[in-house]
Amino acid sequence: MTVMQTTPADTARTAPADICSAPPRHHPRPDGQDRYTISEVVAFTGLTAHTLRWYERIGLMPHVDRSHTGQRRYRNRDLDWLDFVTKLRLTGMPVADMVRYAELVREGESTYGERQELLESTRRDVLDRIAELRDTLAVLDRKISFYAGEGAVR
Amino acid sequence: MTVMQTTPADTARTAPADICSAPPRHHPRPDGQDRYTISEVVAFTGLTAHTLRWYERIGLMPHVDRSHTGQRRYRNRDLDWLDFVTKLRLTGMPVADMVRYAELVREGESTYGERQELLESTRRDVLDRIAELRDTLAVLDRKISFYAGEGAVR
DNA sequence: CGCTTGCTTGGAGCGCACTCCAAGGCCATA
DNA sequence: TATGGCCTTGGAGTGCGCTCCAAGCAAGCG
Image (tube, rainbow over all chains, first blue to last red; front, side, top):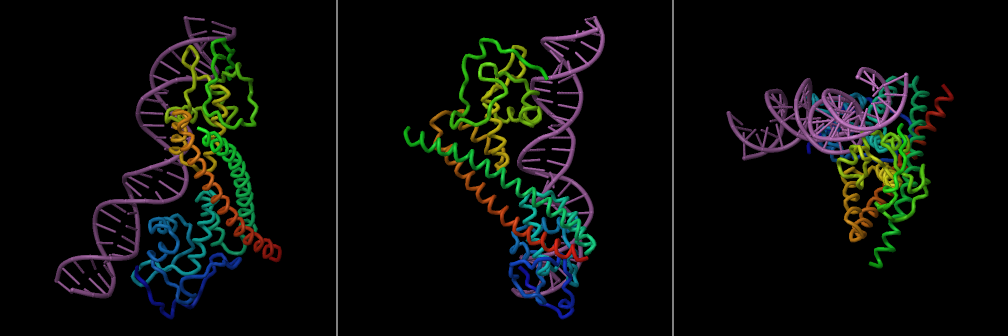
């Protein structure tokens, strides 16, 4: 894993990818010293380098900046974004929809309304999903207790 | 949709695919008159005919019997099984694992223990999944309320 | 009889979300 | 100077869970 030193120029702007709602995560390095190589991000997020590059190719990442040799240097806001994306993925949201959300973020404040709608629809999906899982849990519990009863006898 | 009349020979045995825990579903036709064509099962379950045939090919169905011309005739127990499989699929269980469970059912009572373990591990997965979704819900709610606040102002 | 509808099969194809490959650049250490 | 490690790219490949296709059979209807 290659660790980078921070150059003064980097600390200038921390462009807000998606400013809203401060995430509770605390970052590996404080803002200003946050320039992570791809392999560091692999270690932090559990995603593969392939996947990180692929996310960028398909437009799922807000522009990641580069070192003078062209290598990716991720920042804290990128880690936050990746955390959020990972959460969305866990809901089963298709990647295409996440890309749509990413586009809205790039377009700026004028898309707040549409972003809210998108998240609310996702929220409904999550609630439905939880309800389904509860249902399934009930079925599993009935089957399991059947096996526990019969199994004990024979 | 082709509807079949029941021949006396068919009512003979209702082989229990997976006897345990009476499902609360009530069937389209009572036991004894339960011989459904594939397209009826499509209508009942929402699965496609392709998928039903594929399930059979990969060993996910307990033997489905046939009409004298070789067409599939599903019975109430098959509908119950398909309901259960659908629930398992909703948990995200891989098809290969469902096939494994189907094999255990075919092998008979001696596999009660292993079936119980398999379902208990699935149950744990479901609980984990619900916890993840709750987490995600919290994130979504924070973002949504941010947009609701800001969105109202601008 | 011909036509339609519904079913049969093995095998090929598809969409999604990665996952990997080949060829090459940069740079630190020996 | 050479070797190794980490990085770059476009494009091809993979695994899963279906999804569809072509060719053909059986039954019902005018």
